[in-house]
Length: 220
Image (cartoon, rainbow, N blue to C red; front, side, top):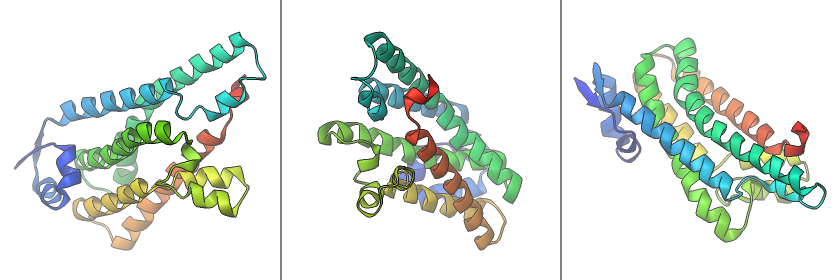
C-alpha cells in the first residue's frame, strides 16, 4: 500500500491517516512535504521576527545602548530567527524520529511522517500567535494559550514563568497526537511509550524556555 503523505490530513483526520500510515509500505510526496514544512517554518519565524515578536528583551535595551548597537542586536535577532526557522523542523522531524527510533524502535520514515503532522500543529500555533501577539500587544510569557499567565500570578521566578509559558494547549495536543500515532506504529509497552514521549517534550520545553529567557545582550 502506498500512502500519500498529507500532514494536514494527519491533523484533521487522525484515525484514518494513522490506519493508512500503519499499513503503508511505500510513500508518495514524502520529500515534497518536508520541503513545504521547512519553507513554512522559515517564513513564520522570519515574519514574526521582523514584526518584533519575541524581541521583548531587545526592546528593553533601546534606552541603554547606542543606535548602532541596537541595530546590530536587531540584525542578530533576525538572523537568529532565520536559523530557528531551519533548525526547529530539523529537530522536530528528524531529531524526534531518531530519538524514538533509537529508544523504542519502529520505521524511521513512518516516524518522520507522523512527526510531520505533529510539527504542523506547532506551525499552526506559531501562525495564530502572530496576529494574537500584535493585536493584544503581549509577549510569549503572556500567551493566552499557555500557563505563563497563571505562572505570573503565583511566582516571580522568571525561569519558571518562561518554562510554563512553553506549555500551551497546542503543545499538549501535540503530545496527545504523538502518543496516538506512535502507539500504532511502534511495538512497545504503552507506559514505556508515554514516558519516552514525556521526556522528549520536557526536554523541548526546558530548552525552549532557556532560550526564551536568555537576554540578547548576553551574547555581546
